Length: 79
Length: 425
Image 1 (tube, rainbow over the protein chains, first blue to last red):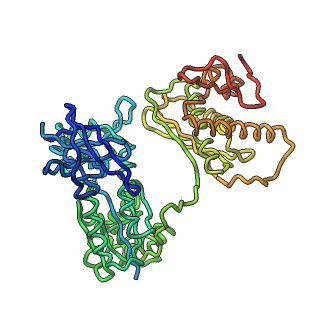
Image 2: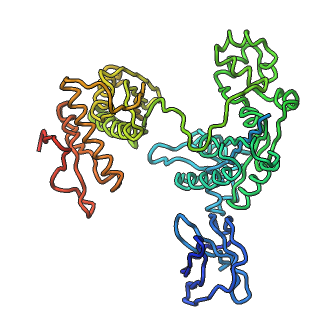
Image 3: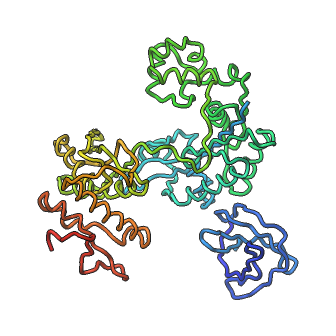
């Protein structure tokens, strides 16, 4: 069962669209997003749906979700 | 030939709950109203619950008898509206002729889209599943009624095509209840003359059906033969408003007239506000009273002059109530409806009558309150029910408003509509 983990995200408006630049995990570690390979609306495995950003961070792919109504960012965690 | 799609979100409320709470998808689940507020009925169920015989509209205890393991989930209206809007925005990428039918169903006229309608339907089905995690059944046909039949034909997550040449093989064997606008009463009436399937109805003489069901019967007969020329209305275009109403099932039964007055005043406030928002006035009032044995009455009367003012609606509702309800049993629900509507025109006929002048002043005052509520929320200005307890004169006084200060507490001083004095301080 996956768990929804809300995180702090530094985002930038780029050409009228919002793009995440870096994220800070619950334990305070901060990561810069190297690349965004895909943006689309998709359901999240931990529940709900939102804009899914497929991000590359230190050569690993991470799916970040953004809910425009609630204005929250989250990722699905196995822990 | 037109290309019409009817898209139906499968088990919509239950699917949205499962989307936001994936753990609910493991067993039979239903969305229900709040039993504490006595809204304890099944609003929607998932496929597993449906397979066990749980039906929409039945009481929770009935559903539990059929399915003791049924998981009940409270309804979250705002989520359904939000998901419905997202699905609709997908539809609107293919055509601007999108006509909603409730939150979960829509007709789409894709005749002017260059893509084949079946491809559009498949693409919509895939996108709704992949982007929103919901499933839709889509009927593709040449008119609205056949498209609706198509979306009901195969569920969930499916596309069904009904062409004119498919009517005899696909549509005619279906039971009458599958036909749009054919309710249980009509089904029973036609069953008495041995008309049980859509094909039975289609093969009857039109005149014979008209004799039995009247003018509406002719419409049904046309539907059964695959004939429907109604158009898909463009997105945003609203049907003419025929009435404006509000009803409520109360958390506890009403035992006396004061409680009824309080409820009608609240309903009249809502109805009048909606009338003003739509820039309409009504020329009649209808009330609905349901007692604890679930027996209900509906009564209506004409107004002396057209209105969109709370006080007039409230007084008319109370008059109707006093004339027609004799307190055989306590009351479970009440409803108030403004009927016989017309547009509120600025150049309407004026009058020197005192009632007319008073009506105008109330309308101006209540319009000002609408503005305050729109800006600061419905709770910013509320009615003071303390004045509702006494004699009938005090019911008028109950129109006094009280306001909340910045901290949310009630302000000491009443804020009265301009030009009004407090009848009691």
